[in-house]
Length: 569
Image (cartoon, rainbow, N blue to C red; front, top):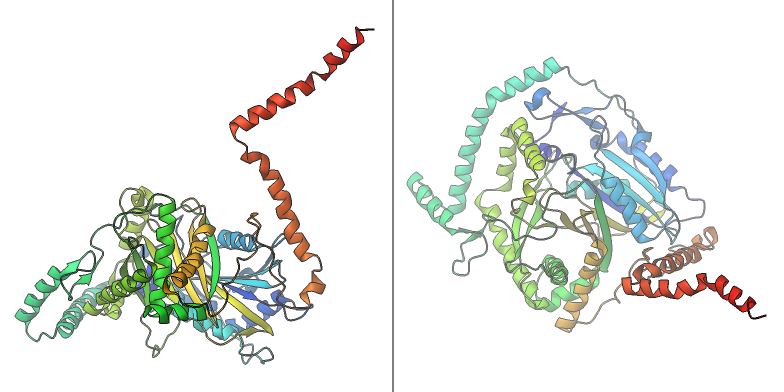
């Protein structure tokens, strides 16, 4: 058995009836040949990986009464067919149909009596490609370890021979309640001692960061530091640290969430963003933050809900060193940064995002994130769980503004092309999670020469999420126009959507697909024409409907007119 860390447990404790702790990745693959069977290949490879990857075969065992952190136990009743599933899209297989299926899958809580992962092979995409949605609980992996798992799942060439072979493994029976309570009692007894050691460690870290060697000097410096803490970057103090000490301004998505999700995705060429990086003098991350800021600004302006103050974003930060003995645990922290949504100049927004991120990074300098992570190990799970459930039950997110508005994460992925059993990986799109009070998550993932935006929200709070993700791509064009930079690559068109927005099907990724689905493109176009025809009458105003009713009335009186003509004989 292995006990979960405090950080790992936090992702279990965050779950309520409407909030989930799993993260997801949507991979889009080419079909290398007409007879390629993605489900068989995925099931075979994951079956091999289970014997090599601990996260795929371990499940959670809770301590009675939540007196201590849970444990990982290797599942003695492991069932591969429960975890690997096969579904298909109805014609035409458009991008929004795929996203809708993804939203429904991630909107379901995972079964904690089994290992916390699921894999869905999705076929029926309009261009002949296939998708793989991998759903894994955040208690098991973070973004960085997810990239490690992706590289272990894939190959570096289309004809590579997978290096791993099937390995036998034996599950273990979970401990009895009595055994768990005995261990919990022992841990509770020694936690105060560990907590005292942690407190001393925090003081030592503060002293080291401030260059203080005496106790009195430390007290003086702490008072100065507390005086420099602000709710936003201070203009008159270069030493101020930005902390979310006040509520963030309200937005349409900063409310309690429902169980239902909405997902939307778009991609951009990485070389274009590098051109913008050079043109603005910022980093690639600065440009990404500015793109998200500009899109949120435009969206709120259209809704007439742009607040006067800046929006506030929580930005996850990996604290991995590469020297971890156990890669399958969470090594992540977060900073909070102000987004310059009040700035109308796209280029100036890049500079302001750079300043905001620089100020936010000071939050990690006061107390190392590693120390904060250890602090979570000594938090009582029963107290934390009760607090989270109370917040959800009382819907406090509808009464009190959250300290942050949105989560924005930029995850660097592999720069080289990846393959799976000969199928090329075309895109890897992140699908993250939301929580009460923060009903929007924007995650960006780079792969090869592209950058994929994955937006997830509550289904009720942002009904037009596809429009919001389109605004992110529009913001890239605004930056090119504002800087005068030249496009490295022509911007990518929208993916085909079944909602009738006029976007056509994209060409098949492999020539053999045309033989497999000869009328796929025709099927993609025709349903949208029929849908548009059906929707047309709905757009009539009330006056138009009355006028149409009057025109239809004389036709019903055709019979009496014939009788009048008969009397003239």
